[in-house]
Length: 369
Ligand SMILES: Cc1cc2nc3c(=O)[nH]c(=O)nc-3n(C[C@H](O)[C@H](O)[C@H](O)COP(=O)(O)O)c2cc1C
Ligand code: SF4
Ligand code: SF4
Figure (cartoon, rainbow, N blue to C red):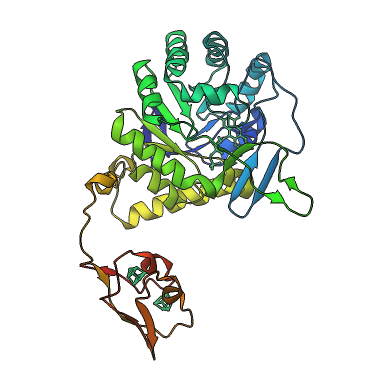
């Protein structure tokens, strides 16, 4: 049921483990393949492997910040690593990153020779300045994609950044250059927090924010690309459950990638997410992931298409004995009061904003027309 054709490759499921240090070498890639993921993406390979800074990864309850700068394994050594990674089979996508098309061509060609099944060009590093600029320049992304596509026989996916003003334009450039797919999004430039006792930012430079924090940004990027460019999309950002994967697919993604969840919960989370995805599909009568793709897009309007109308839609009073009061406190229009065992909504005051329907933990309140 979960089998899918992605990038011309047969994947056993659409859940891919994203680029990152959990896929830093042959052994870790092999473990990621064994976790049951449909495919795995190597940590980004560069021509000048850099030494790491310390500390470089921080996290809190909602996600992580990293300032990890690419693979520290030189390209020549990846021949050995790929041999180990693929010793039990599996689909390995090589992530490559560079400042010039010729460097990218060099890295991608080497990884093709070493047995990669596809290439992902990462143009979206949220840390330094150089590649961040690349991610916003459709013409540079076009040149990079075109040269790599011409140099290798493998499918080429380009990983886009949310840190750009027009993600559609960049996705269009990838398609025009012959790219097979875009993946979106990379971690988003940010600062996780500040230790105010010591006036110390969590990590001492800007970094990539990932996990829960960025899922709404990833979903919006995938939806925007789906609605404007006819190219397969791999959805990334804040996926920690099968349900999240379905959200991305309903916004138009053909497959998804997971990073922070694998980092924080371990590779066993892959099996859980795959089971959740399969369980949901089974219980909703879906027999293939293709049937989910884009399902929610027809309900996604532009703001201009939203009907602005008098407050004809209001929330109705409901019986409630919960000791919670959240709806009354949150209603900005003073429409909610409590009377004995009921939450009473004054329909003359209710403006239909919808907030109480989301805040109610018991899902008792509904907007009715
Ligand atoms: C520690 C860490 C290292 C990462 N390294 C890379 C990398 O080498 N190349 C890349 O394209 N993305 C890298 N990423 C970004 C992830 O692949 C992914 O796009 C991002 O974390 C968002 O997905 P998530 O919320 O599931 O983590 C890294 C992320 C983290 C947390
Ligand atoms: S829909 Fe908005 S205005 Fe109406 S009761 Fe709920 S919170 Fe108040
Ligand atoms: S938010 Fe929901 S559970 Fe809480 S008082 Fe209002 S109706 Fe009851």
